[in-house]
Every structure is written in C-alpha cells, then in structure tokens.
Length: 164
Length: 253
Ligand SMILES: [Zn+2]
Image (cartoon, rainbow over all chains, first blue to last red; front, side, top):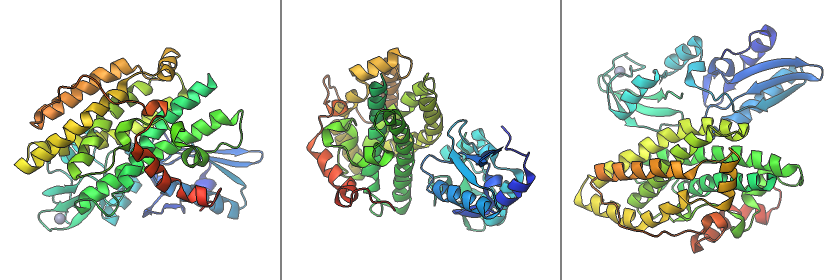
C-alpha cells in the first residue's frame, strides 16, 4: 500500500511533523499517514498507529492538526487500524535517516527473527558497520526497538524491530 | 445482540487491562533494567490494545447511552462488571511467578488473536491484526524466559516449578466457553475456544517440557472472573486503577 501523493503541498507541510520519539523521522517517512482527502469542510487526514500503545500517536495527531490549520487548512485527523502498519512502510529516505541517527533500520522478517531469537550476528553497527553485534535486550528504549551492542567498536545502539 | 458484543469486548479488553496494570506495577522494580523495560513495554502494548477495544465498546454502547466513553469503561465500573479471568489478576510475587503468568497468558493470547483475525466484525478483526504483531514478541520473550529459568539453576528451576504448580489451575478458565462467547462464536464474531484450547495446551506442554518443568496433574480449575466473580486481589487493583477518576470525577490530562 502506497501513501498518498496527490497533494504535494499538504505533504510538504506534513514533512515538518516528526515522531516525538525519533525526531529525525517525519511522519511521511514513517509511513503513518495513510491518506489525505480534500473535503468541503476541510482536510481529512487518516493516520495509523505504529504500535497499539504508542504514546506518540496523540501528540502526532495534535501536531498534524496544528500544522495544517496554521497553514489555513481546517483539518480532521482520524486514526485507522486496518490495514495495520508495518515497518515496510518506512521510506528508503526514512531508513537512511534512522541509520544516520544511530538506530539500525529493520531487517526483513526472517533475518529479524534470526537476529532477535537465535543470536545470529547480522545487524550492522550504526557506528562502524560491523555485523559483529549482539542483542542486549529484546525490548529497547521504546516498544519498537531492541538494544544491541557492537563487539568491535563497543557502541551500544538501538535496532528498529521488524513489524509485519 | 449489541449488548453481547459489548460484553464480549469487555472480556477481551479487561484481560489486557488487568494484566497490563499488574505489569505496570513493576515499572522501576524489575529484576534488571532490561527485564524492567521489557515488561513495561509489554504493559504499554496491552494498554494500547485495551484502548482499541474500549473505544469500540464505547461506540457500540453509545447507540443507547452517550455517557459511555473509553475512560468510563476503564475507570468507572464496579468489580463485578469486570470480565477478566482470574489468572491475570494474580499478584506479582517473584520473577518466576511474573514470567509464568505472562507465558500462560501470551500462549493463549496468540491463538485467540489468530482466531479473531477471521472475525466477521471488521473492527475486531482489525484490532486482532494489529495486536498479534505485538503479541508474537510477548510470547517470544516470556517463553524464552520460562526455558532459561526452568532449565537454569536448581534455585531458578524450583521457583519456576512452584509458580507453574500455583498458576496452572487458572489456565482452564481462559479457554472455557461462557454463554456470551458461545453466542459470539455462533455469529462468526468471536473465537472458537475449543480450537484455541488445543493450540494453547500444546504450546504450554511443549515449552514446559523444553524448560524441564513438569506439567501439573490437575483436572479441575478455578473460574469465575469471566462472570464477574473475582478474587480478593481484584478490588485492590481497582482501588489503585480507579483512584483518580473516583476522587476527581471526569478529570482529564
Ligand atoms: Zn561498531
């Protein structure tokens, strides 16, 4: 499923709204904006949560409304659950930004399972690129991340878990 | 019909809420930083799922009563109106106990959600699709710990066996069908618990075996929670959980 691309002006505004827990990532790059509809009474923006209990969603919804209304668009934000968000919706640019920020981007599902369950060393260190890394904790600073450490440069880093 | 759907949503939501609350009590008290973070993250996932169920329940109830909100459902009911099973209200003892309770719930939760993904009710199916991705991680976490501790030192093994023996008589209630669940199943909305049961017991057996723990020989089980008859622990949970809303009605952040 693709995110909407029919409203470049609105999307440019939404590029400025970021995930409060990962401030380098815009909600467009995160893939949480599912559709933008222009209606008579204003804009209807549909977003989907990353994790059910993600405490950032309420803030994100408020930020969207504030940003668009400041630009003169009366806006309603609606939270939808289906189809459920997956890490595949993070854009290539979003993945690059995560890596720059020090969070390893999600692997595909099978590799993710090997890394998290079987201790296979395949998650590249965000500092030196070595895959000689080990998992410290399956749950990291937020529900969407696991904590890893590089055995070569000793850097501890977050890994964004695959969600499918 | 609408009322049965409402009650069914409470059953689904209350298990997640009461267990989520039990786990939240560990915030800052986990045996290590990593397990503390893991358990509170699981708590957060469960609360997210609860919000989805209760928002929907409020919508269902809202057709006849517009005073009902997700918050009033969570905070303003009396003990006998909660439909969670007795397992999830059991208090935190040692880590072995906490992990065993979690595993017994997660191993049930996963096949339950698999069944609910097929629900004819679109909103329940959507919540199940969303939740199952998280619950897979929960089950991985708890079953790995059951194995590590069961097949660990003599001390950890003994503590795990004590926890398993104590909690095992509570698992039957999870898959025991009540009239509401039967009705929901027949309408294609709810899960068929007989199918959930066989997957559940199989998983429990396999993991306990791998953990070198013995499965208790037990033929009856404790029940009542789904009908609103709770243990003494339940009201203590509610007194903490409901304190704010009871003291300052309708307060908001
Ligand atoms: Zn490194």
